[in-house]
Structures are given as structure tokens and as C-alpha cells.
Length: 268
Image (cartoon, rainbow, N blue to C red):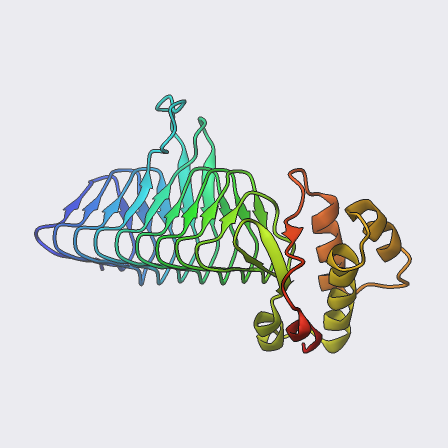
């Protein structure tokens, strides 16, 4: 049975599992919240939002509001959120732009205070979005990416698996999986710490390192590097995903910061 504070406002057509709703929180008609989820004081859950089980929505967070877009026509769109996600203070997550569209968030993600996810994004699993990070519309963030504080991501970019974006970075190109990005869309090295902590096998790590070198340190352009990679006999699934990510890039991938020493990239 839901535990709802007497000052909270909950729409009669909202669907609630065994949740806890704090003081002055608002849950609109058409919202759905799974059991075990906690909605703290002054949070606002909008119509069209589905939240899974065991999530946390902290004070002042706004989840599922209309997109910040001049072309929004008021159509019915959605926000779909999985399980065990944490939305800290004043996080804002917006629903889709077009009629019937949706912003989709997976499981086990951590959205720190004042972070923002815009309309029609696809956010995977086990992702950290630090304080003040801004994710524009139509962005895809793959599993286990780490986006540091006050990062800005341009609309339509793709952030690859286990990539790390350094604080204050501005990203307007696709971020290749397993890489570290700093400054103005500049790839500095592999995400050495992330790779060390991962469960990837040593063969996969070695292949990722070779692919990175061909893409960024060989002097070849992307097409030439992909041609060389195609000569590899067999790729581990993680390395194959890295290659396919680059092949599917429409915006182009982040450039290399050639002035940065990369001795740390040897040690993964």
C-alpha cells in the first residue's frame, strides 16, 4: 500500500505501487510509479511518465515535463524509466517532442543534482550523470558511461559504452566507446580506470587498445583505420561493438588531442 503524505497531491488516475510520497510532492494523472520507489518533498512527476521499481526521486526534481522546444505542439508523449534509478535534487527529465514519442531511461542510473536530460534521449544502464551535466535532445548514452560535472552534450550525439567525459567538456561529436574525452570534443586516451574496473577479458582489452591506436595514433584517417581493423581475424564482442559504433557515426567521432601524453593508455 502506498504511503502518501497528507500535503502531497496525487491525481486520481495516477497508478502507484507500494511507494512513498513525501510532503508537497505532485504526481499528475497518467503517471505510473512502481513499488519501492520513493518520491521526496516537492518533487513533481508529470503525466505520461512511467517509473519502475525501487527508484529515488529527490527534492525538487521534475520528471516528465514537456520538452523545452519551440516546436512542441502539446501532443501526448512519454517518459519511460526503468528500475533502481536515482534522481537527485532539482534534476529535470523531459518527455518526447512529437506525438507518441518517448524519452527512455534504463536501469541503475545515477542523475546528480541539477543534471538535465532533454526530449527523446536514450539513456542506457549503469550511467552516472554528475552535477549540472546537460544532455540535449535525441542523444544516445550507452551503458556504463560516466559524464562529469557541467558537461554539455550537443543534440544527436552518441556516447559510447564505458566512455568517460571529463568535467566542463563540450561534446559535439560521437564519443567512441571506452575513450576519455576532455575539453572541446577531444579524445585524450582510453578510459583506463573504467577498463581496469570492468569485467572485460584481457583479449578484449588488447583489441580495444589496438583499435584505439589505429583510430587515433596511427596517422590514418577513419576510413583507412577501419580498413586496417577489418584485417583482424576475429574480434571480441566488445571490440566489435567499438568498430560498429564508429561505422554508424553520422556526426563523426571526436578528434584526438595530440599534445597529451598517453603513457597511461599502455597500462590497462
